[in-house]
Length: 78
Image 1: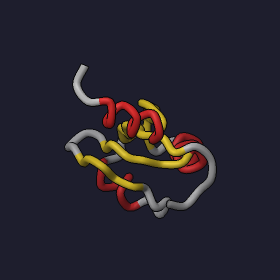
Image 2: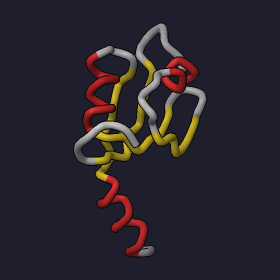
Image 3: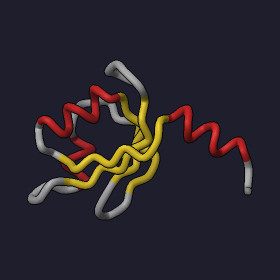
């Protein structure tokens, strides 16, 4: 994955006038985990997410860090 900093699991919602396909075409090397008609779930570095925000391509919702996600998934049902 390109970019530096903490890796986040994030929801990307395209900005008005943009589409999910537009986000997939951006050459940032995003690790796409889920594709939905109106958003993507990705693992991406802070710098990649910041670039999407800077260019106003998407609304970025940082859900948790990748390490938090992995810890949550290995804990099992509560």
